[in-house]
Image (cartoon, rainbow, N blue to C red; front, top):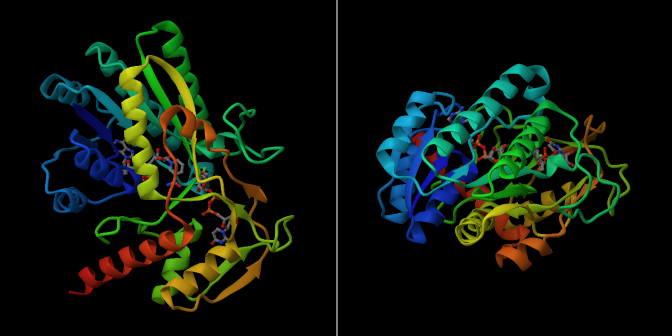
Length: 337
Ligand code: NAD
Ligand code: UFG
């Protein structure tokens, strides 16, 4: 089976390509490299010892997407491509709406044209807004607090309307919680170009000495130590969830929604102390004001994914902390050589 992976050079996409190849799928990537590098394709080949076809280009380019479908005989699509920085989306909403919606509409139109009606979509726990109770179940009310989140919610709506119009579609909407960690090889992972917004990439930069200290956004939340609680999930576990989703949509038509999380909540301080312990480094931090828009706690009820997809996360936060650091140390070593 041949899978088109949009955004396959990115953080979650690259790990998923490795899992797909290891599971015997053929992989075609389209990525415009706006948030990734081409050498990831070689790293995927190095890890899996398999071939990957790479198209460098924009998913909004209808002619290119048409060309890919006409040449490649694609059976199903995993759609990762999109912009994902919450803060930037508030400053540049049109960029986010244009990129994330236009790319998806282009993709879906071409899929329809070639009668390829199986898609796995990367959504986010952000679509739950500020949940009233925890853990979060898939049928909780949906809302968003920023344009990035709105693009996810709109795309979920587009996919639902598409299925209503044509029951031949098989659609899995995966709502990710907080992916961290990296491939055990240390060859692929997440290392943002700019100053990171997310917690783990920031901790790693403090650990390498590139940044002086971590600012912890608030220690007065109603949580066990006052700092924000999230459901961190190892990116390799997350990637494996996509294989299960592909298997499922190949068996059953319909549209369905799955939380991909561990079901466990860890605080900012839990993550900092675990990172220090497993990597034997000191993370300097200071407590600052809460970050606007943050919720106190967010973690998944992941039982639906277990029941329907037979998927469950298996890696703990120690492994997540170890692998995140290993990847960045490895890439810094490459840069210095
Ligand atoms: P990423 O930025 O590492 O990967 C996205 C990839 O898509 C990048 O390689 C980028 O170059 C590419 N891309 C973006 N727009 C494109 C376009 N128009 N045409 C072609 N390529 C394009 O992000 P990620 O962390 O791997 O996230 C993958 C998906 O999962 C995204 O849709 C993101 O919104 C979603 N998601 C991520 C998280 C997270 O915390 N990382 C959480 C929830 C959901
Ligand atoms: N935090 C800090 N200091 C930092 C960065 C983060 O204290 O420098 C805290 C936050 O306040 C929060 C926790 O660490 O309590 C996690 O923050 P992240 O920015 O890493 O993650 P979020 O849960 O805020 O959001 C992320 C993505 C969203 C996505 C959501 C759920 O950025 O796009 O996970 O998947 F929607």
